[in-house]
Length: 591
Image (tube, rainbow, N blue to C red; front, side, top):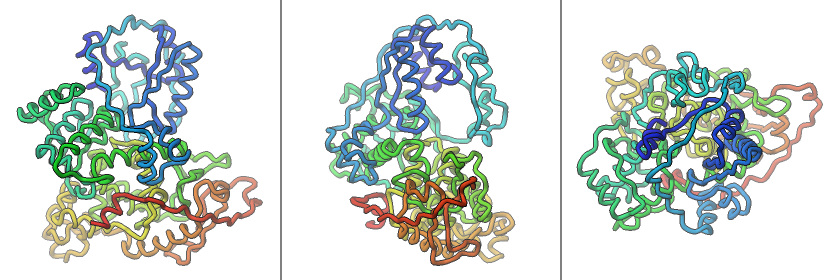
């Protein structure tokens, strides 16, 4: 926000980003009146909260005779148009999305940023008090992260009345630990640097499955090199719509192994279409280039696929199992608990039938499972707010269908809290994918906690970075330190079970058990909108029992007065055919 505000000031020294602190439903009508607003422009957002917010804001604008312009900027195509071309249905495979997109023509080129701005005009506001514009904060989802009081809403226009951008201190947050710097300047610098790497060959030959999730941070910034600046100037001369290269910044694109553009795309610091066309032009000119869906353009298409799916399902419903027509019903442990009215109970009651699962969930989220690869990734998430996509594959599979059999909704909540590239559609979509709840169905394929990372780095650099307890372990034990003899553990200064946790579960045993659970769930063929799922009466028979599980597993729902009289419905539905399913997992199998 600070970077964007500075960009506005460069265009007009009287302009900056004006922040009014409060509910849009209360504050906007006041601004419409006092500032004599004639037009309101906002970017289309498919998220559940955003859809409801924007609907209410449009109604308020209409009452004030303010013309509303909803602009598409966050995706390649309008998700609604993709849905229409897909027969009114959610896009659940990349093939479906590509077929629908092919009927819409080329991705529009990005619009150039303005070269000048008119002065903002009179910013005076008549009597403005918090009493007239209260802030409702029933559920503070970030409470655990805060270390101080939230003073952000003590005033409506900032402590000095100058519409200042709230500081982290005002929000009660600690000093950031991430080395990934935000803003358009840093984002566009990274895009330019990545595209210039190896004279464009890196971008041309980029294949997501061939990048490594085992590269540790930091991912910081420095000063520009003359060579990079000259390259960007040359590119700007070839494309009249290309803006000047961001000055005074250089990116080390050797870290991580992928583009790291996701945070900048999420916050709109860099446009999806700018990325698309910069990569498209490189691919067209390159003598040899990677193909979709593994290449850079394919990654943007996967992102768009989730937006269309989210909008088709409904943003709020897309984020959970219950009511979700594309999400398979799998009777996970630690499920969301609903009231009789069908609303999620917040905070979520513990899963009293499976206390061990609650312990596993806490250990997973805090990076203390006893599996170094999983723990290193989760600690990286907490420190950097980011992890490689294939690292997300590992931790998500481990928590859900791989070992822990815990609802993907719980994992998505942790990612909600820590990811700096958090995007509702991609986050919930990927969690459904990796738990084999939607988009992907090959539940027999599970990521190993040692074999998988060893394919990328046998030295365990990521583990040594984020789990300093294991820094001195020999390479052969870095992913399985519990196998090291006691003498080796003593020499490394880390006794497993004392200085670093022993594995919290038997990886192979839980994998085998969960595969049978998944078989049973797939055989039942139920989805989140099935009547027995909605009314909490579903039971799926699992042919095996683990140490603490009964063989009959059902939904978890807070009992109501009429619960006992509800008839059980054992209707099953034929599983949807995964027509045209493509993805990174299938590609890895081919490789």
